[in-house]
Amino acid sequence: MEKFRQVAMICVGRAVLFGWLAIGLVMLSFSFNPAIAFRAGAVMALAMATILLVKAFEAGRKSPRHTEMWLYLDDKSRPVNPESKQVFRNTVREVYGRFAQGAFLLACVMFVLSIVFVGLGYDKNLPILHRVERERPVQTLKSDPAQLPVLARLQSRTLSRFP
Image (cartoon, rainbow, N blue to C red; front, side, top):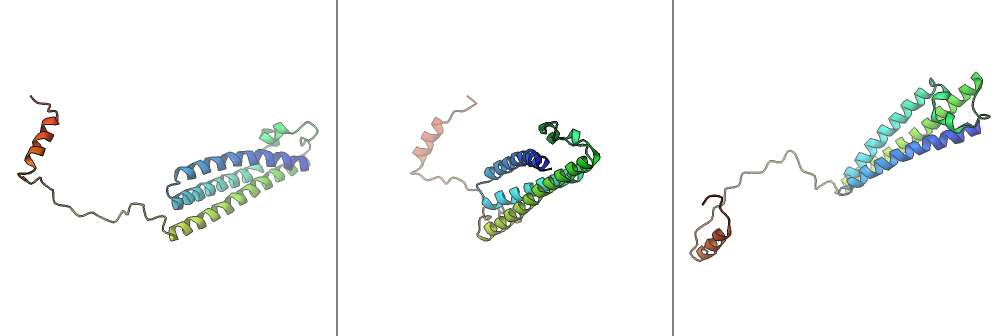
């Protein structure tokens, strides 16, 4: 049974590690605003925990032959009789549940960190949707006699499409 658990921890742990790599890269892309980065990481960690829980519930119905763990077990360690298959299913379910628990805990920590960063004012640079800018009057060039030679030089440098 310990061999089952070791192989299941390696297989599930590797998949979860790749998931955390993706979450970390998305959080890195939001590094301009730590509040948003931790909020995005928390939402994706919750999604990963949900997927792991679904896999844990699915592990009870799946045949051990159709799992990745089956490939890594040698012939002596593979479950043969129905009792050992049930022990294998329960072990895989427990491993998925343990990783889902860890992902959920880290998601909660990231949500708390996001709230802390919002409290510290790191969320101020986001656009405010309810703010409407007032119309400003259009500024026109005033003809100043001192500025006329400068304007004439600027106009002569611009290319015209029409002859």
